Amino acid sequence: MPFFHITLFRFKLTFAGLYLLTLPVMAATPLDKQDVAARADVQQFIGEMVKKHDFDADKLNALFKQVELRQKIVDAITRPAEGKPWHQYRPIFVTKTRINEGAAFWNENRETLERAEKKYGVPPEIIVAIIGVETRYGRHKGGYRVMDSLSTLAFEYPKRSKFFRSELEQYLLLAREENIEPLTIKGSYAGAMGKPQFISSSYRNYAVDFDGDGKRDLWNNTADAIGSVANYFKRHKWQPGGPVVVPAVVGSNHIQVLVKKGYKPHSTITELRKRGATAKSKLDPNAMGALIELKTLAGREHWIALDNFYVITRYNHSPLYAMAVYQLGQAIISKRAAESAKINSGKSINSTS
Image (cartoon, one colour):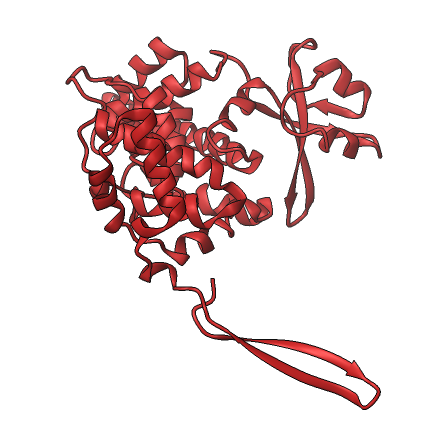
């Protein structure tokens, strides 16, 4: 959105030559200077909330008068990290610090993670890695007011305005249900909230009170965050004990046909092998899989993604995201194993001394 006056140039070619005609055009009001409540599209939205959900029109008008539309939010959503190649994306999330912090988070919440796995069938490393990728284990939950983020994207991001209008609707319903002041909650530029970064509709549908204190609090309650992530995965058909993704060897010049089919499992492991993609690990030949290709500095690497990999992409629709979660989780397992071995080694030395 332009923040300045624009001169519109029109060219006219005649026998005598090229003439420049100018026509001044007034600039639109900058986003952060707008009276949001006065906008026609916002008034339409308020009317829908009153009619569909019995909201008070005066209260919604007062609320939107305090909303700030921000160009920074629109800019951020047009440059997601998922647009990077794998060799640039992976180092953002699979780091030594995040691995160490993940091991500590697991140790601190071991009983809760075990209870979540028992109830929902989702292993601790996946839950821990999700929270690690999303918010560094709850420390970075976002600095944008969710009301500003969702309003900006609902009314100033035409590409996905329908989705974000729906999420704004869900957010207002959530705030009413959970007795939350809408302007006090902060989250990501896309309106994701809490330690696991649930969007409003996910919060309403999948958040759980996992410690039994009578409320679902994903901002401050780690137990609720852990249980809610596990519930989300179960509801999206996580297969307990099932594989996620395995390295593959490709032996065909036609594997791009498989890659272009996407990351949702579409062929059996046997069919993938016949078409040039063979898993390096033993898999059920009748299991469904997909071939994904990652760009590294050394070239391209290939993996066979199974149903559980696809479930991770229901959290964030990107195979890069799912791979980062998987690899971070595996690295945290290795870190904890090394720590355990070191402790046991120390005990062994002490027992023989």
